[in-house]
Image (cartoon, rainbow, N blue to C red; front, side, top):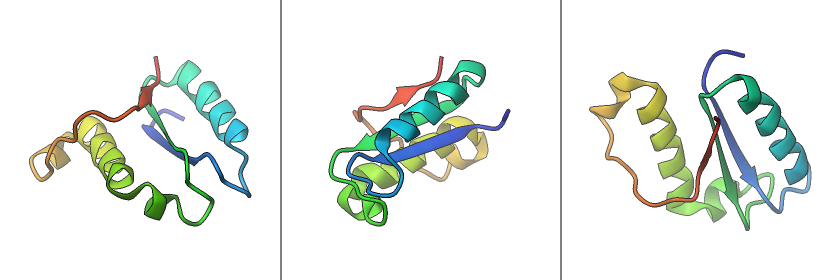
Length: 87
């Protein structure tokens, strides 16, 4: 996959084990430097967006700003999150 990839992982996910998300991220980032992985300690499969609150939405915003330059003019730059980027 050559397009940017965003991984949002709830560490309490009962359907997709966090280790699987991490493995997918590692495989993708080994050949695609435009990957972003963000984990949410209290996130479950259906509520990561809720438990992640503002940080969840800011992570998506950061991803768009970084990989969709035209979106930057419409968004406010987020600050200080623990986000891991592909190499």
